Length: 116
View: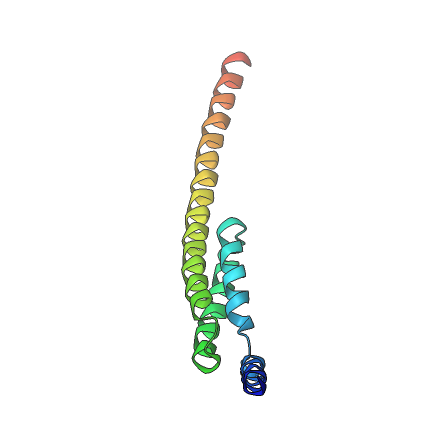
């Protein structure tokens, strides 16, 4: 009976000595957020950096490797989504500028016709 108590004590001490990998968790959270809320790919880049550092730390702490890899994947997806959004915004602004020039030309032609 006393041996079981001592073994349980040793197991709990080993678990307490193992540190957690907060960088992997933070990288994963920021990576997931970067897919939905993306400030010009900045959140994706931050998530990628945190996840890579968390992956390196997981070799020391032996915890958080899966979260770090998932954070890297989510951050890459967030960066890609951000790049696509930037391209879409540039295309939309370019389209609006082109159309506004056409509208101005048309208005000027109509003014010249009706102002004799």
